[in-house]
Every structure is written in structure tokens, then in C-alpha cells.
Length: 428
Image (cartoon, rainbow, N blue to C red; front, side):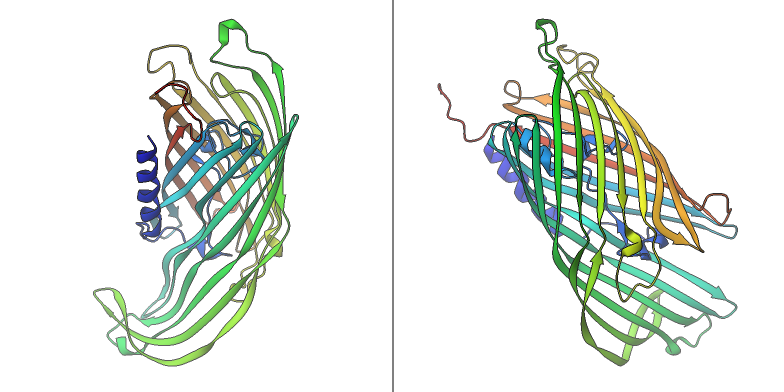
């Protein structure tokens, strides 16, 4: 089984290093550091995105590092996103799609159900937009492309019913912006654009705490369903600064088959070093149940994006918040019937985005559905896999002002592989 584990890790690392497939996704990704990626892994994305109060012996929860203390078996996880958006205004319709690897992670129990470790790679944010404002025979063209990633390692330790954990991460990547002025007639040689590239790198962190209490002990009749727990969690980090290097130049270009082709660069600016301020954030959450039977939970997340600092991007942002609720149920984990062992999940959320459009802070709301399909190879938790499927259908809107409507559709496909490592067998 370890051969398959090693092969999957290598395959995913190669896949993660490749470019995501995409077309222009959303013009709102030009705000701040771009479209912020979710750090919620596949197992709870379909439960409204709850994560702060969630812990599991067989899944990794990067959102709250305190959950690593509950990891009981070596766990490998991968998630892939396909995001689509449709923005409608009075005059036009804008459609886009984007595909990315959501996370690649490994969790290891250093001391079973007491001390755990996790490390992995996940996207932090991405730019992906291309739009223009046209007036008679001229157009202002705006494009953005690029991604920031987070490489992390975290650990957690449990003392009685309390677990405390910390994630240390390194954010790195490149963001490319262009702002152009083009003639829509034949004078292509006079099209000009300012091209700016930002290379970012720096350390971030978050700390977490969880309290997990058994409220109902398992009986012989529900042995595999297990105990019923209540878990309360909190996590967060202070504001941190990461390094940036900015290069910028003016370019003249012509359009060849609707593709801007640079013909010369009349002006280059010297590279400038700076700082990007990533604001504080925190979340609190509560779950009840057992994921082999039923589970429900609620989360509240807050981030102080009004304190975001970045010299290039002067667009004002607002503090964001989100309330999430969700749950899942397994009809009968003891059953040998395939559909009885599937976990069916659903949830919803409502909140305020960090984006301010024409002076109005955007609202976000949506619903999620999904399922987790277990496949056991060699006894409970020794060699097992789970496939996760989720759909998130939501909207982003300025509220009562009918400026536009944005509907988005997010699909996530996840895979979890469990295996017992470092345990000597008594019999071959």
C-alpha cells in the first residue's frame, strides 16, 4: 500500500506544479490579493464550509490546526476545484471558469490521538480577469493573471479534552496586472499598456484551540457508529507582513488575432521592494455528533480586510464575515449495502465579502450539497479510501442596488487515503 501512497504523492506534486486550466473568471479578483481561496478541505466543504470545530481521526482539517491531535492513521488528501461564474449587468453577460488544485496534504499521528503533524500545499489566492470599458473607437482594457500559494507545516498536542495547535506557512507566488488603452480602429501601433508584476513571499501562521467532550458513550448496538462528541473550537492569527518586489513597464502593442502582442517597451521602472499587510482573522465553531453516524455544526469567521495594505492596489476593502451551518448523516455504517454507508451532506452560509463595489459592500450567500463515499481495503482504518463530491451554488450581490448579479457554481472533488504506518505487524 505504501507504494501507492508514494506514487500518489509524486503524481500530485507534479500536478500541483503545473498551470491550472482557466479562462477569465471574475473581474472582482482584481481587488486585494485576488480571489481568496478557501482553506477548507473536501470533507467539510459540502457542510456549508464548517471547519473550526471539526476534528477527525481519518481526515485533515487545515483550518484549525488543533484538530491534528486527533489524527489516528497516516492520511493523504487531495482536492480539486472547478469554479464557474456568471455576472449579468444591464448591458452584458460575463461568463468564466477556473480550475485549480484546492489542496495536497499529509497527516501523521506522532502519538495516536494525542500528538499529530500535517504538512501540505494549497492556493492562497489567484487573479484571473479580462474586461474592458469601450467608448466609440477607444477602450480601456484591464487584465490580471497569477496565483499565490501556501506551503505549510503544523502540529497539535492534546491534554485531556483540550487540543492546541499551530500552522506555520510560507506564502509565495506572482501576480501580473495590465492596464491598457487601445484604439478599436486600425491604429494598433498606438495601443499602450502598463504591465506590473508582483512577486510575493513571506511567512504567515495561525493558532487553534479545541475542546472535545464525549457526551454519549457507544453501546454494543452502535459499535461502529461510535461515541457522540461535542467539539468547540477557535482559531486565528494576527496581522502579518510579507515581502514584495514590484516591477513595472509601459508597453506598446498590437492585436494579432485578438491577442495583445508587445512591439516595444519605451519605459521601464526600477524594481521596488515593499511589504504587503495581510490582516488579522479569527473563527469560532461548534460541532456535535460522530461522522460515522450523524454530525451537525456551525462556524463564524471574521477577517479585518479594511486593514489590508498594498501599495499597488489602492481599491478600498471592508472587513468580511461569514456564518456557516451544515451537517451530514450516514444511514447505516454497519450495513454491507453501498448506499447505506455513504455520508450525505448539506449546508448553507451568509456573509459579507471584503469587496466594495461603487461604495457598496457585497453580500455573499449560498447552499452546499455533497457526499463522501467510503472504500475499505483491509479492516477498519488500516487501508481505506474516501471520495468526496460537493457542489456550492451561491450569489454575490450589492444588495438592494440592482447594479449587477453574480451567480457562481463551485464543484470540489476530493480524495482521502488512510493507511497505518510505523506499526509492526505481529503476523505476516
